[in-house]
Amino acid sequence: MTGISGAPDTVSGGEGSARASTADDRVIPGRRIIAWALWDWGGAAFNAVVTTFVFTVYLTGNATNHPFGDEAFVSAQLGWTLGVAGVVVALLAPVTGQRSDTSGNRKLWLGVNTYIVVLIIALLFFVQATPEYLWLGLLLLAVGSVFFQFAEVNYNAMLSSVSTRRTIGKVSAFGWSMGYFGGIVLLLIVYFGFIHPDVGLFGVTSANGLSVRVSMLIAALWFGVFALPVLLAVPELVPNGSAARAKVGFFASYARLGHDIAGLWRTNRHTVYFLIASAVFRDGLTGVFTFGGVLAAGTFGFSPGEVIIFAIAANVTAGVSTVLVGRLDDRVGPKPVIVVALVGLVICGSAVFFLHDAGQAAFWVFGLALCLFVGPAQSASRSFLGRVIPAGREGEIFGLYATTGKAATFLAPAAFALFVTLGGAQYWGILGIVLVLLVGLLVLIPVSSKQKQLAD
Image (cartoon, rainbow, N blue to C red; front, side, top):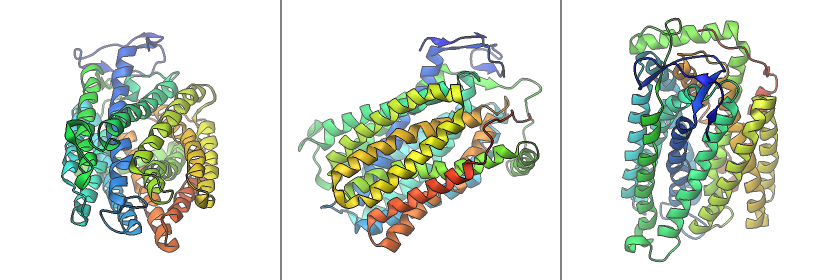
């Protein structure tokens, strides 16, 4: 990318900060956009390798191997654990985001939260393939999920530093696609380096889960390296005098948050409706990837290697579709993109459930079809909100975005766990995820697609 046309950014406070602007006539250097998007590329270590296609599959097992216990039991505990982690994020994300806005230390907190996640991923190496280590694995997953979400709040808030209102959809999509493509490369390294060979690099074998555990160390290194460019190359966005807000204490931040939400309800009610709708459907989108690998292994009998091959194909599909649809986002607006994506997800998810007896071919077809829609929906949701945030409140509003999402984050894991428990088989969890997506779609439909910018 060579840059996005317009006039140069104005710089304040040296090279480490930039004056916030709402104008559409800025030039955004291509290197800055790439540096920002590399965090998503690195974040694939957590999203693709840890929570979707490698470590969670390691915990829940496959058709022939269940090192941590009964498949349905472990799957349900995974769902409940991630649900609890979501409650923690819901309580803290908007305040931590708001405080990073007023402190001017958004990059600092992005770095702190990111490298806590890097440490958590590395600690997964110690989760050996025996039932005694199940709760250690689940605890580390939960803590990692919390701090990854905190980091993502600050990362999303930096979207305004690397885009203009004319290009926000395209840039947001570029970031999401980099996450998918980063996942492809890392999964290839893990698969051919450690999991597929009987004896992998450095003599690593699958005994006691060593191939997966070493893969966690590779994933930690991956995220640690690719998280650096955004911290070094993207300037801190400093709000101008009218947009700057005074610092308040931690508990006073909740009072400010309540005041801001009340003001949002009075002046931009459809934005509140969108936050509610996106809270529901984004949790369903997360559920598609979180439990996709688990279902592939448990219900459709994929081996660990086959799960990774599917994951690579899934990331290619999602990455390409996200890039292509990102340009459409800037032309027709984000809401039509989200609606079409959710309809496609409900249809394809239902097909996976009803065709679960058809074998792996059905999962390949409709599982990949699901991936066509996940990335565009996530990217368009981020750009929808990014278009209405005034300078200086990015962290707070994206924190609220995270909180509304995490207020509902128990929905997909809990619905998955509930349907598995009621149905007595893992594939019933698919219906729980489809139900969450459908509810999100129904709540989104009345939301106005034309939004004005929020008040400072």
